[in-house]
Image 1: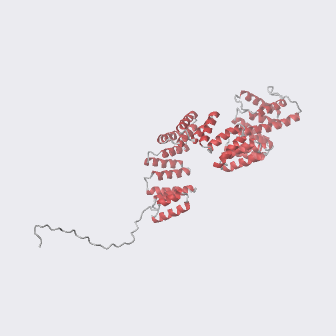
Image 2 (image 1 turned 120 degrees about the vertical axis):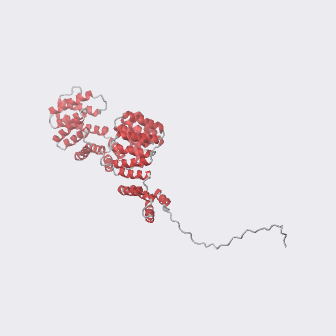
Image 3 (image 1 turned 180 degrees about the vertical axis):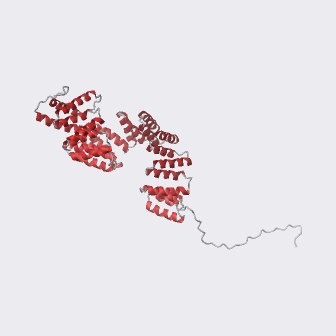
Length: 462
């Protein structure tokens, strides 16, 4: 028997053994469980598989999966179905009305449909949801540019630059300055942008092309060369530098540069236009026509391409084709005096001198300071037998040529004036020293007229 003073030790209760029934765990429904897989196929551009997964996801969620709708709309837009993408983005926006990204995509689709005011309203709503997004302000500025509200466009683009000094915003703000005629402000802005982004070829090429338009060719060439140093295949820089080389008559060097550009932009109409005019400068007219027609196919509403095609056909003495292309260019650019002058040359050779005279008169109205128009008009009148009117036009040519301060007149133009002057008994300042019969002078005048047309093609056609 144990002593009563001895304490007893209580043992802890033994745990009750319970039988655990193992089986399949219940499947927990996840609302957007395939989002990662949809995203994976989208970034791989496997759109067929991606769209199949999206349909499964939408079927499981009764069409209430925001991410699936968002990606489906992106794919529709990439495939060119802009209206369909807009409708799907709007469905996604209804599921989450506080998402600025979805609202931005709605605005983008509206913009691509040409509904700039509606796109601007959508961007305003996105700005209310996210007030620090530079992309929203940038796109608002572009919408205002299309609406021709340049004051608001400047304000929005400046806000975008303050939030993020993106090159695209600098370029668009400079474009606004140029549209308002403030070239110096655009130059200052682009210079500041180049200093801020010293290794960005897009910014350097943009500033270089602006210098090229303002006549500062050395600065332009340096900037375009620096851009090509950082990116030897940069398309804008190659096109700008090539055009400068082309204007100097180095067609082989220009063609070498354009060959590099064809690898990165094989469907650029500007590139094929310049290649065509290089072949024209090398007197390879068939190749020139082939390249220019390819450019016209890629950009049928570019008047410069139709203009160049008209010039080439004039030199080839295919006057009906020249008339066709020059008429097309005039429909696209009706206020160009050079076009009317060349159209008049084509009409003259098509034995329609009455309409040719009207074209010459219209060219003089549009470009009253251009002496070459008077010279071509003089040749046409002389060959039509209207010597008195031809003498008047020749006098106008000499008067305007003498008052012209620029020195860019082609020597062949002066030779033409000198050859026709004695036939009209005018032009004491420009004497044709080689004598000849009247028939001989007429042949020289016809040849000189052809030279004038070729001169115009080589200077303005590029």
